[in-house]
Each structure stands twice: as structure tokens, then as C-alpha cells.
Image (cartoon, rainbow, N blue to C red; front, side, top):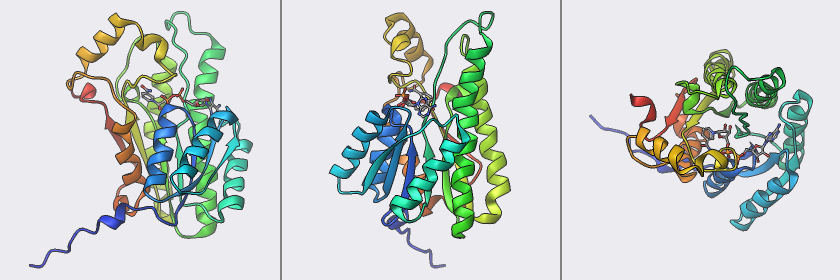
Length: 259
Ligand SMILES: NC(=O)c1ccc[n+]([C@@H]2O[C@H](COP(=O)([O-])OP(=O)(O)OC[C@H]3O[C@@H](n4cnc5c(N)ncnc54)[C@H](O)[C@@H]3O)[C@@H](O)[C@H]2O)c1
């Protein structure tokens, strides 16, 4: 029996356009990875200067990129972000939302505003970014790719991070529900669940040598993550190579959740 040869170009994103929300350490890596694969994009963040820096890096590797200020906890700003992307890029193929916050506090001490803010940015933001992109995809009529960013702490729990881990578990299951609902529009909704990678979101805790050692001992590969560990998954999920995959979250955690 003849076997079709694998076409590596299915992993390319040439001629495609993306919104990358979140210009933090991981958002930057995702943006550069999608750009290396060929995508043009709008990079958006609460911190416009951070988005501008990432957009400039994307441009320096030859792709079209521009920056935008957005607060993803506000649904109208999620919609505005997609409208601007359509205006600047002409169409939209990929939405990757790498925005996230964490407020660490003992669960006996968590205050209502902590809970609400973490949920508003991590879960509500994830939903309304996806919805804004999906509405554009439905109008365009050619499908699209939505990539959520959860966490290994959306798969397993951990102390002092209950709102964060609940929000990320919400993202994992939201990814399944949206995937089911939007398959009829040929929209793939998949997620990436990173593990501890030293970035501004956790630098304070990871710079504590005892905590860091505990984490490294918890991870079978005996090291923390690097932003680059996640980029291949983002390119795959954005590309035609993942066209039959939906509702899944790729857990990239050095083995943390294996035991
Ligand atoms: N770094 C890790 O170890 C790790 C592990 C698991 C999951 N994650 C997830 O990966 C994603 C990226 O994290 P990171 O490590 O790059 O963190 P980061 O702090 O470097 O980046 C987060 C970015 O989100 C932006 N942001 C915050 N609130 C916003 C809002 N309301 N609207 C728009 N932008 C906003 C910040 O300005 C920042 O640029 C997050 O969802 C995070 O939860 C990170």
C-alpha cells in the first residue's frame, strides 16, 4: 500500500495572520515562533510598550507586526483587538491568548477582589478573546485556530494558588466546550499548559532557592521550563498539521503531571 508522504509545509503559516494577546515572556516566544513560521500579526498587551517591543522583534525577522493596548478582562476590548487586527491585516486566521496573572495567597486569606481579578483576566479574558476571534472566523467562513494558554496547575492543584489553578482548570474545560460547539465552523480550539518557567509572573517565587529546588525535584526532567519548550506546540496548533485535533490541551511540563 502506498503511504502519502508527510508534507512539512503543513507546519508553515505563510500568508496567515494572528492576534497574539500577551507580550510577556511566553507571549513573546509564541509571537516570534509564529512569525518564524510565516505569520503576520498584531501583538496586544495591557502594557503597550511591551507589545511594541515584541512587534518590533517580529518585524526584525521580516514579518508584518504592529502593537495594540488591550485589557482582555474587558469583552469590548477583546472585540476591539480583533477589529483592529482585521483592519490592519485584512483577515484573521489565528488567535493565541497568552495573557495571565497570578495572585498567590493562602486560601484562608484570599479576598474577593483577588478571586475576581484572577478569574476576570485568566478565564473571562480567555473566553472573550476566543469569542471575538470566532465571530471573525464565522464571518470569514474559512475556519480558524484558537490557542488558549492554561497551566499544569489547571490539571493538578497546588497550595496558595487556588484562584489561579481554578481559572486555568476553567480554561482547559472551556477549550473542550468551545471546540465542540465551533467544530461546525471548522474552528480548532486547543490549548497549551506550560509548567514552571521563570518569567515575571513567578520570578519572585522562583528566585527563592529552596522553592526552586522543590520544583526541580518535582519535575522528572529535573529542570524548569524554557519559553522555547512551548513554541513548537504553538506553531503546530496554529497550523494545518493540527486540523483534526480540537478541544485538547497539550501539557508541556517536564513530566510534572505524570505522578
Ligand atoms: N511562566 C510560567 O511558569 C507559566 C506556567 C504555566 C502557565 N503560564 C501561563 O502562561 C501565560 C503567559 O505567562 P508569562 O509567564 O509569559 O507571564 P508574564 O507575566 O511574562 O506575561 C503576562 C502578560 O500578560 C499581560 N497582562 C496582564 N493582565 C492583562 C490584561 N488584563 N490584559 C492584557 N494583558 C495583560 C502582562 O502585561 C504581561 O505582559 C499566562 O497565561 C500564564 O498563566 C505561565
